[in-house]
Length: 406
Image (cartoon, rainbow, N blue to C red; front, side):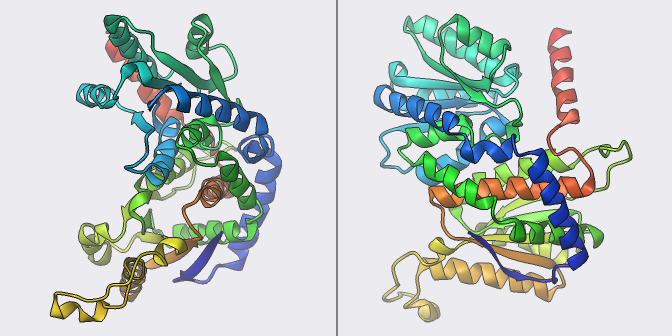
């Protein structure tokens, strides 16, 4: 479903051979972890049951989670929710008190609001603290809240509380990290609640596992960019509905690839910092810096074929200077803007690569999520680093607790 439209540099065959070898190793090591999620019908069924049940008894679903517990769901909601949707999904991923107050007021009827607590470890401070404040508000209102939890299938703070209070718990497999959990109930429950087809999301994910050739191309191109000392990977999405998709990819890349040591105990190689842009908006914000700043960027354009073929044709214009656009659609305009930006970067010697995804439906998005997880984990395999831990993030959490305890 992804295809490479264009690239500033040919793919190095030695790097591609290395990438293909890394993918073969990855598919052996991770066959029972994130790669297995496209076949986990038990997880799909549990998500369908909760999502459909809640669609009948609640109007607003609030996902209380942070990082990988929120970003993928946000991305799906950004694409599948419409102003006409009767059921609304909201995300609370901040302890900002004003944001929490605004969220509380946004929920239309607190008796018909479902609160989905998501924490891979079951001990993440943000959702646990927010749950306490939610319970406090419901106690003041003298009504019973509707809760469900998503966590590892083992004893932890969240699952123990849920069991004590007869709150349903859906599973994130122990072998699947939080930022790789979008294809578990973490992403599936909000999708079902919105009335979309979660089974097709997993079908698309399964197809991504067959796309090793293009995944190896992208891994090889990234390794080549590191060799050129391009230490910013800028992912430029040409879709207004893809800002959260970009945020999801940014976390996946950053937490999976930036590590202090290799698996063999040596100093880890330098990797790029991921940045996200949205086109054409950011042509008017960061393009000047990208064009005339330091040439240290690998710019990957992410485009959507269905979007570029959508829209009605303009019949006439009130502006004489715009005569050239009569007969064209907005889809054609965004395609031309993506191509024009890429050509401008190429003319200044910047490295670019252009990817096209067929559409933004459930199957294509399932493919998108699994494809990038394979690329990032395969890249980590090439670099001999652990794609599935985040040691420094845990340090920050411990220090924050120490401050509150002091």
